[in-house]
Image (cartoon, rainbow, N blue to C red):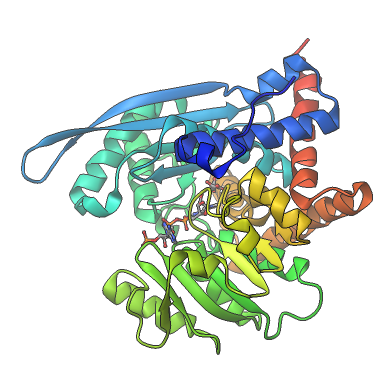
Length: 428
Ligand SMILES: NC(=O)C1=CN([C@@H]2O[C@H](COP(=O)(O)OP(=O)(O)OC[C@H]3O[C@@H](n4cnc5c(N)ncnc54)[C@H](OP(=O)(O)O)[C@@H]3O)[C@@H](O)[C@H]2O)C=CC1
Ligand SMILES: O=C(O)CCC(=O)C(=O)O
């Protein structure tokens, strides 16, 4: 049984919303893994269907007194291996399909790296840049109040994603705790360290991207050229860490534009420019290029670290990077994957490459539950161990079975969740 039919032409893809395309991709990869694992139709359907999906209306009182209403979502895709876990995204194009896809990827990711969680994701269809800090706080608190009955340290633990940050997590912790009547730091991860956040969480996803890149690059990273799409919480520290490891970061982009310097960007200086001006656009010490050109640069490594659907059937034939390390979730469509595989390009898939964030979220949650705190070195050592062992398991299966790293990662992640279903007897 096939769970879906992916759109096969670029023209067809443009008729479908980005969220629906992301969900189609997620279902396509599940389908492939289910075939490989010989899962029966009932189990396949269970794994394709979210356990719980909540859509809420979030009224926002604007500074000028107007009242807007935006949509919010929390999808718990699976809770068979443990409480649901996953970030909260604030973005204007977020919809239920996108959040469902992202929640499903969280399930496989947590299973793949062996942490005791299911998968979830949340989102609010709002542009955070268009709101004042007070409006943002009101949206966050109201959204959390609406999803309150289904979250909690034993149920579902949110974290940052696109458009949210440590401050958002602090408001979530506070809103939940005020309702509970006592402080509940373990309800959310990615908090400021003053509220029980873990050392190392802020850069954890990027550190994982660095570890995955260094594992995937055969030979020394020295002088290897890198382009990074997205210069936010994942992309900017990833660029910096890859430069620290000896790579030459030649181009980065954000929503404002893209910049290139073949002799190597000074990432720290560029971060200072972004803090000052709000984006990479106009950076003095580099040339401008288009968003599309960045993805097609002749570089050793491309790190997509923005949104889904960046590399498609349309632009994949022009992608020249030999290695793609997916900092973002779902940046490569299944059609693009096939084109890249035929061209001999290695893709380290999202559920492996960007797992550093949820790994350190898990470490933060464990510290919260035990009321203790670990040093930055302890956290980094555990992160490194889990990233490297997960990478090795995926690479070994890929080599053994002659399948892509993405297919191997999904076979392991989906296989572990399917096995947990069988053991619990949820599927008699
Ligand atoms: N934060 C985390 O811990 C984790 C995040 N991820 C994934 O990583 C990705 C990025 O998340 P995160 O860094 O947290 O999000 P942020 O909101 O911090 O950053 C997103 C970045 O993408 C940029 N961007 C948006 N649209 C484009 C575009 N068309 N071209 C180039 N850049 C663009 C934004 O630019 P601008 O600032 O100008 O809007 C911003 O620099 C997402 O896919 C997320 O799901 C995965 C695992 C964990
Ligand atoms: O840290 C977490 O719990 C989740 C991070 C996340 O949203 C992701 O890995 O996509």
